[in-house]
Amino acid sequence: MNQVQVTPNQTLQIKIKRLGINGEGIGYYKRLIVFVPRVLPGEEVQVRVTKASPKFAEAELIKMIKVSPDRIEPPCEFYDRCGGCQLQHLTYKKQLDFKKDLLKQSLEKFKPTDYHNYQLKDTIGMDEPWHYRNKAQFQLQFNEETQQAEAGLYEMNSHRLVAIDDCLVQEETTQKVLNTVLELINHYQLPIYNEHKNSGILRTLMVRIGIETGQVQLVFITSTPKLPKKNHLIREINEKLPEVVSIMQNVQNKKTSLVMGDETIHLWGQEAIEEKINDLTFDLSPRAFFQLNPKQTKVLYDEARKALSLNENESLVDAYCGVGTIGLSLAHLAKEVRGMDIVPQAIDDAKANAVRKGFKNTRYEVGTAEELLPQWLRSGFKPDAIVVDPPRTGLGEELLNALITYPAKKLVYVSCNVSTLARDLQVLTKKYHVDYLQSVDMFPQTARCEVVVKLTKK
Image 1 (tube, rainbow, N blue to C red):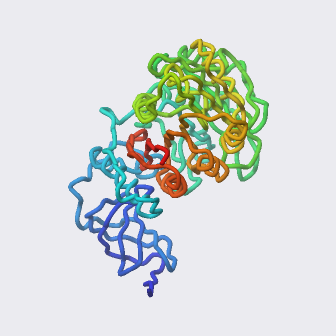
Image 2: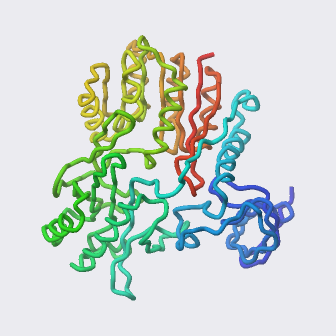
């Protein structure tokens, strides 16, 4: 097929057919696929090509010719520049439809066994799809013009910082803490890290709140263990922000996209904060993974519980367990729960959480699911059910092989990336039948979606 070649800065008029995996509009110029952010299906638009290749083009919106009835005015003043949200211009009902459609698109691309017959349930949304994030990680940058430090998020596909003082998807207390700490950083003229010069100290501020407990943890992420004016900072934070019960420092001295490094220093207060989900209390240390939307986490885990349908004679493996959230929420229903994670602090938290709840039927180990699960299976441990909640990269090859070599009666896959989920289902459906897929909107206003998949052994 001959592709039409376009050139950068060329102006095109196209009709948008659908939304892509990152929430961008997809249209065609003759037969060339064109990706345009912030536009909607059914819209006719004039765009300027920003990137051209033989197989696709990227473009930016110049003018709306025909507007979708599903378009709304984004309430956030930073939305045009910030890369944090992708769908604020789309009605919430249609956001939920899009997330179900995204799952369908991925299945059609990877074509796992019998995918046409999968039951795709409607996406479960939120009554209030704003101010839901319990954790903020804002990058710091020194503005040469204003001679002030700024905190915020990067523009889409760039390292240009958008200074943000009111993020509408962020829990309001976390934003208040960020704004106050930024004022202190400027008051004491603390040195901000500059990645080009590899100089300065403060890189990122992380704030996490226990929504149910109100406890707040503040983490200074720095390029060195040194933190100037440390005692002054702590004293002022204590005075101005009594909700902050834990102040920590994390050292990230590598040039990497990873926000946190391996060394964490306890500066003041508690080393972890508490969060509650249903009747379980969890300790959260700075590097421990925990879902960003606790209200929807209850919904997500309830869907996982329903899909597993455990009884007291059944054992469960909670792969990628983090602080034990999924497994511990099911431990009272099972004979035994085993979990693993690569972050030692997370496993420490999981063990502490199990002790606090009085569970004697749990076992947690540090290591990858890819290594530990095959070891356990080879040693004769035969779980009745397995729940996997992998990172966006999906399941590793070793783990996939173990799951189909030693298939459990029940497998529940909790996914945060529909593409890697559909890819993994290609392998898993060799030994498992897909009962249904239930999408849950954990991240309103963004293109991300979580899915709970119920699988049973063939």
